[in-house]
Structure formats: structure tokens, C-alpha cells
Image (cartoon, rainbow, N blue to C red):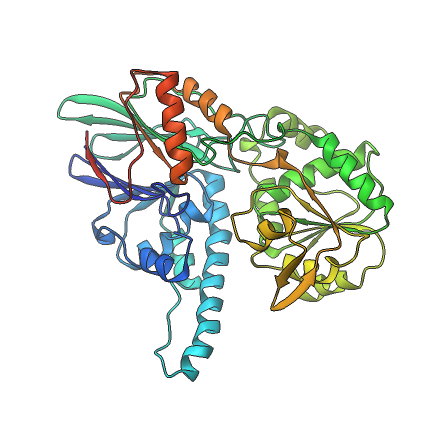
Length: 464
């Protein structure tokens, strides 16, 4: 068996790991690489393997850094099955279409300048049609349901507790008469999530590919710190202003909706309008309703014993552009949740543009923002920021609430590692910036001195 680390090696994007066994080639994830435009474009267009020679893809979850380059793979000749959970498939249907729309819009914008400069026009990485055709190759499998996927290899998904449908990938491999179990963690949730179950424990693992996004970071707050959200909102709304919450369309927005539902139900926050202004978030919320198999016990019983966890009287889900524009004219207190979470694109930019200079308003961050993104600049306290080509002074109150993070931190990763039972003869740390992965490797070696922990580099090929 050979493993080639084709992405998310000493970085957090472009998850792709190629397994070669018994003459078959299995690709774990096929995510978009995100970084400097030229480098990202080259990596995403040029696979370190022939797509037509891949036999099977196994997808851990729907986030674009794990799924976003699947349409490129299928349009370049991959014709096999893409195995995922039911919820992952449904989320990919809308998220890959949204990604394709962004690719097309980016190409259209860049080509305006290139035509003026006499340069050849660029093609989008893939189109919305190619994204739709890609989804036809999905084969859905429930958690805990073993299924043979190629010669000598059986796939089982375990719940990863990260986003709706996220899975740990178990491959039971028989090669040359020897049996081994490989576990790919995917992205690992923190546990104690408002909506999802905790990551499942696994047994008899021989080879572990494990994420290390927060390998040397401790979250400031535990999960379920909903009283802190309540306090922030109460103080903000006492000023009779708006609360703008940049939030990722999938998972973070649905967590917020559910928590706000509970706070409204308990009369812990004022009865004011709450808007979710993101077509992708609205679509994702509808998909959440279809997948109670992913819910923890609390929200599962809430769904069947009470009512829709993601809908209540003063909540409005907005798709239409004109309805979104009307929010700019609101002069009364309101909560507006809008994508993107890092404030790099989407409707949230217009809400920030119209509200960031009013000291009555509050901007509340509930998730991670990568360095040098607009969200990062606002979070770290920059007094002026660029938004859609103009410079604005930050006069709104800026608040940060870390409890909604979907990624396990250092201690939670260590707890997950201990839940993985078996010999764990080889451990490979992936999906983490180099500093985070190397630090967590040292932590694991101190934790288990006999452990063989490696932090592979991009395109490293390991024979096992």
C-alpha cells in the first residue's frame, strides 16, 4: 500500500490523499486549494495524478477545502463512484454549484481587464453544469454501514461531529493476505455541539491520517457558551442598533439559528427581527431539516416533540436580492446573519459597508478568520478597513465569541487521538499549517513516546 499526500499537507486547504492498494487508486477528498491566486489556480487545475486513473473517491465532508475540486476531477476524466454520507451529498449539491458560480464570476471579472490588455480570456475552473454533472457520481452510505468499494477494501463512515454529514473514513484493507485498518479523521468536531453528535470512537486502527488544524491552540471558550451570546446581544440591542454576524453558510449559521430559537423561546433576548441573508445559508438550512440522523439527542427530540429547530416566528430567511437591499433601510434593532464568515465575499460586505461606521451597531464574530482577510482586520482592531473598494472607519462595537468553532483544539484533538483504539503503528498529521502540525506532532510524541508520528509534505509518497 502506498499513500501520496496530494494536498492539505502542512497547510489547511486542498485536502487530497491518494491510496494505492491491490491495483486500485482511492482518493480521499478532493478539495480546493486556497491561497495566492496564481498558485491556487495552478494547483487546482493540475492534479499530481491522472484523474482518469482514479478508481474511487471517498469524501469526508462537504466543506469546499475537502470537496471543492471534485467537478474538475470529473470533468478531467474521473468516472468512478464518489462515496459520501447522505447529508454530505445534499450539501455538495448546493455548495459545488455555489463554488462554480464564484468561479464563473471571477473569470468574467478578470476577463474584462484581460480583454482590454489584449490577453487571452481565462476559463473558470469549472462551470455550474460541470458541478451538477459531478454530483451524479455520488453514492451515499449511512454511518456505520460497511460497503466494499474495490478489491480488498471495505469502507465504513463514522460520525466526525464537525458539520452535518461529516465523517471519519475507515478503510479495512486486505493486501497480500495481511489485514490492516486505515482511519482518515477528516475534520474533527469539538464535541458537545448544539446540533451534532460527538465524534465517534474507533477500534483496531493501524494507520491514522489525522487533521491538526488547531494542533497548538486552545479555544478561549467551551462549546455551549450560549449565555455569553445572550449577554452580547442584550447589551447591543439596548443601544437600539443592528447586530451584524458574519457567519459561514453551513453549520455556523444553523447553530446560531438554533441557539437564537432557544433564547427567544426562553425570553432571554428581546423579541426583534432576525434575518439570515445568504442564499447558500438558506439552502443549507433547508437541507439540515432533512437529516435528523445527524442530530444529537437534544435537537432530535426538539424536532419531534416540539417543532422545527430552524424556524420560528421572528426569523426571516432571505434569498431575494431586493429583500436583502431593503435591510439597508432598517432603522430599528435587528440581528442580521450573513455570509461569508471571513467577510471576503457575499452579502455581508454590503451590511458591513452600511453599518460599520455607526457606533450603535455591533459586529459579532463567531468563527475563525484567516490572516489578512477583512474579518481578521476588523477582529484585530484596525480602525480603518477597505470594503468593496472604499475605506471605512470602524465605529461599530466589535465582539468575538469563540465557542462556535467547528474544529477541535489541541486538547480536544488529544482527546480524540486517545479515543482511536488500536496499534496506531503509523500516524500522519495533515490539514494543519506547518507550525500547528509540527507542534502537535511533538505533543503526541510526548504523550506516547513509542509513537511514530510524521508530518508529510506536499507530494510525499509513503510505502506501508
